[in-house]
Structures are given as structure tokens and as C-alpha cells.
Image (cartoon, rainbow, N blue to C red; front, top):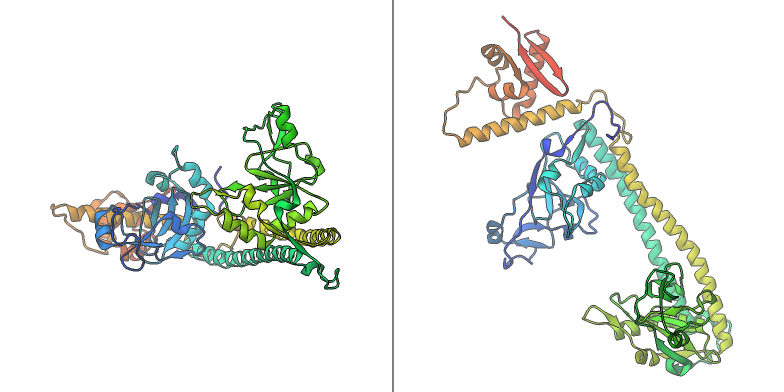
Length: 519
């Protein structure tokens, strides 16, 4: 279904008004390939990942002049709109100077009358359409021909400018709001870290002990009754297979979340050995993400009797010495996180911490009564900050919805008012077509050695009288000898001739035909 748009707008294909240019790949040994500010600006989709600006001057790498000459990359003029066509489809930016791109772009060189900021925002709006038009099996790619067929909602030139300026201002405010909320999330994260640091240093309960800290230190191994790896057997979402198996995704926020469970079949001996009990502590021992390694959670009664997977380690605490909830807080504290990350870090891509390294962690240990108080105060502070985080996330969700809403309003004509004095989009499209026809004709003329007789420039009526037949505006424009810089003069002559009754005008959709009046 076509979108509802104002009467003075129209919908065309972007290839009707813009030239579509593809990028190219430089030689692999190009000497300036990894240099910046030395050669030809070269941009890849990776340069637009997380890029928040509208304009871009260059990417992280440049091409050498030699490398540029040796590859198929085309110099894309300043002001063109860059649109990533693969990996992924839909990144957009405006070139602030002449640039080249790799093959992951389809760039649009725009004619006069088409505001590049308007097109920039519009392409962001139709990203889902572009993704649906992309094809491929290994990865989706938008071909040059498909890019040219992208629908373009064309507004009058002056309205394009008003829309672009309004979106620029509104989305800047949206971005500022998003940035503030992200800072709130960072503050919340730091607050949690401060609480955990204070919990295991004694600062959190200093008033409780009146400053008389009587803490001991012990290796974690001396505080455990058992430490054990989980099962290496595969699990499945089929509930009929066996018992629920706790995996890495279930370890969140120092607790076990049982909402996404898989199931495994183990024999009776394995079930007896690996069944979880209320108060067990599970630790992630291996993962590609260093942030996840060492993450701990306390097993609650709702998952008692469940099994646990091989990438987890179960710590069964000696509760006469340490409260499992305090142990979990201790393992989550910034001090211990630094040790775990340094120990687990790997260059192979998979980070690991083993049972021996966990046993060696030195635990600062208050008496049980103070451990209980630390857990109580930590839980109270986290409960408060959890509510704040929930509100911040809700606000952030609302902010993220603003951009697509504003874009939808902009390109349905609801963001700014229409001005009846604006030239309609049909006239703009006609003029752009004439410019392209003229340019094509001039290129053909330049490439041919055949001499073409030219009529006198600026003389529309002479051409019509000589032809004495109906003639399209494209043909009349070319045969009258006008060029791109004189389009307005051409239309002014047509208007005057029509008003004087010397020519007739017939409308067929957006195509205008002019017919000579018989003398």
C-alpha cells in the first residue's frame, strides 16, 4: 500500500533522480591502505558502525593515489549520500568532501533540487524496505539495480529543506536525551560497583561494627565443602528428555533465572552428584566474553534439584564459615573481578578460570552476623537502584521509538506545514528528467564525430514553428539548445508562450507535452 502523502508530493524511484555509484576494492598491498590523511579518503561500512554524525569526510583508512588508480573505486563527489548495501544494509552518511568507498556501498549522486539531508533522513526511514529488497544466502546485499528501484517520496524542494532542518533539530534533541539516559545507566553501573566494593571492604557496615572490624582472610578453597564442574552432556529444549539444566544464560544479576531452560538425560549417579541445592553458588568458568567469566549466582529453592552445564562450576559453601550470598557478593566485587579477568584472559578467544584458580582467591571474611548485615544492606541498595534502572530503561525505550515516529511523520507530510506557493514535486521531477536527458544528449554528441546542426539558443518558439508538431519538453529542451544552467529560463519562455496562446499545454500524468499552434 502506498503511503499517504500531500497532493503536491509524488512517489518515484530513486534511480529516476539520482545517479547510483558502487564502490571498489583496492589492491591488498596498497601502501597507504592503513594510513589516514595521506591519500584518497576511502570509507567502508565499518566506518559507519555506531557513527552518529550526518556528514563524514573519511574512514579509518585511506587509499594511496596508486591504489586508487589500480582499483575500480569511483570518486564520489561531495554532497553525495552514502548508503551501505551489505554487512549490513542501511548505514547512511553524507560525504562532506570527495570520497571513495568499498563495494559495500551504493552511493547516490543527487541533482539540484534534491536536498541531501532530506535524502539522508529518508533512507534511514526506509531501511526495512532496503533490507527486504536485498538478496543473497551467505549475506544479504542490495544490488545497484535494486538500489535504483528504491522508492523515493519526493517533496517540493523548499519543503525538503524545511523537513531536513526540522528533523535535524528534533533528532539532535532525541540524541541528547539518549546520551543523558545512557549516562544515567553508567552512573547506575558505577553505583552498583561502589556498593559491592564497600560491602567487601567493610565500609558498608562500618557503623554497624562501630569501626571495630574483626575480619580474617582465607583462601576460598578453605571455605568450601565441594567444588565441581557441570555435565558435558548435550541438553535440548525437549522437556521429555530429562531434568532441567542450568546454563550460562541462566546466570544473571547474582541469581539463577529459570525462564530459558534446556533439559538433559543423566544417570542416577550423575544426578546425585550434580543436583543443585538451595544456597549453592554457580560460577561461569569459560566464555568468549571476559565480562561473563567469573559471573556468580546463588541457587534458590525454585531451582533446587536441577542440574548444571559444563561451562559452570558449582561452589558448595561451608555455611558455618561463610554465607553463600556473601560469597556471591564477594566474587562480584570489583576487587575480585579484576583478579578473575586477569587470570582468565586468553589470546585464543575463549577465556577460562579453573577450580584451582577459584580456590586460590583470598576472601576477606567478617563474622557471620556481619555477613548477614552486608547481604541485607547490599540487597536494599540494589533493590533501590534496580527500580531506578527500570525507569531509565523504560525512558530509553520511549526515546528509541521517537526517531522512527518522527521519520514517519516527516515523510507523510505531518512534520511541517505545506506551503501552497512551493513548486510541486511534479515540476521538480520534470526538470530533473530534462537535465538528465540534456546531459545524456550532450554526452552522445560529444562521443560522436557527426556534426549536429544546432538551433539558436533560447528560442523555444522557433524550434516549435520549424517542427510544426507536438514535442515533449525533453525534446524541446534539447533542440532549443538550453543547458543545465538555463533550465529556469527555458521554463520561463514556455510559460510566457503558453500565456500568450502561441503554444498549448496538455497534461498526461506528470508528463507535459507542448504542441505548436498552427499559424
